[in-house]
Image (cartoon, rainbow, N blue to C red; front, side, top):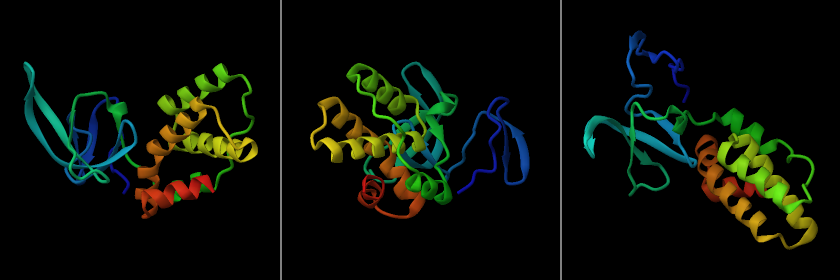
Length: 178
């Protein structure tokens, strides 16, 4: 689902054919990816009080964890919410080759994987997962830090790929690890 509003800096949004100046970047019913890779539907936007401040919050319902609810301030860090990738982007990511070059220095490799897991795009995380899986086939046993990076990476991208491709999370993981 493509979102018709993307101008974040001025908080000018386009809703139902009209432009409005507002701090709301998403609307009820939109699907977003929340920090950490959770695909969520915005069930409502309402004013709430957490602590001393009363402000507007997105009420997010994770698609793959229906019993959970996430509250995200509308005026919070916009980097924590973004539109999910499209089916075409997901197919390109799944079919792309792994990143090149296994870093033999454990510390440098751990830092590289950490940066990808915390700052990388879905494509970069999938590329890292493919590299780790290829290495695992070559050496049979990975270091614990590499296994953690593999597990964390799968958790970050499985839901978004599954949502974009209309498959299960297990099928999404299988598509990127085979």
